[in-house]
Image (tube, rainbow, N blue to C red; front, side, top):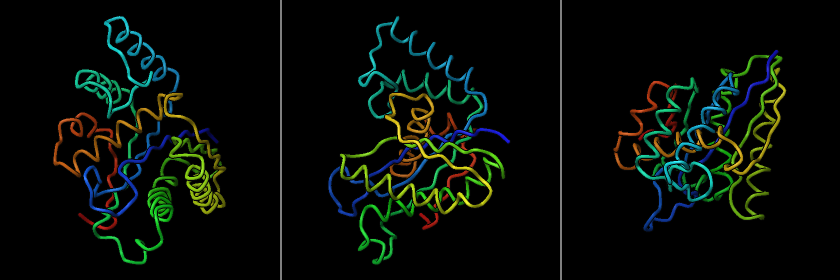
Length: 216
């Protein structure tokens, strides 16, 4: 028996409208590691070193969208060397069935999580393990409650299969693991949307799966 921590973040927007800034893909990226102690210490040291150099972090923590190119390079290099297992599931919204579109945003969120979780959870957590699923908080209060409820339902479906699943919703700034998941999600989305592989390449050895159930 073991405690396993799966950190998760989303990438892309949930609506189907074609507008400036809209994403083609919505996806989930997760990050799992066994040795938290060393990883947390190394992340703290990097953050302190950047501060000593006068490098500010806009949200007080690492966030791929906001960080500078140089900061991203250093964070991706750290992630690659820490032994994380990274996985992603990406849904091409252009190929969604009408019934999926009509079901709305929460349904799409729940489907992405279900498809990702039913495959990854049995790989990272054995029967008898306690699996902590740590998801980044998302949206305003009303939306947050709907998404939390959807994710809770997904975890409940998987829970009876011999794993004790505990769901946590934490702000990304509070957890290095969530920041790793954010970086992984950002790198995958960048490759899928723009064909840019620089950052993807830095974590390719850690990215065990990139599942696209609706194709590309």
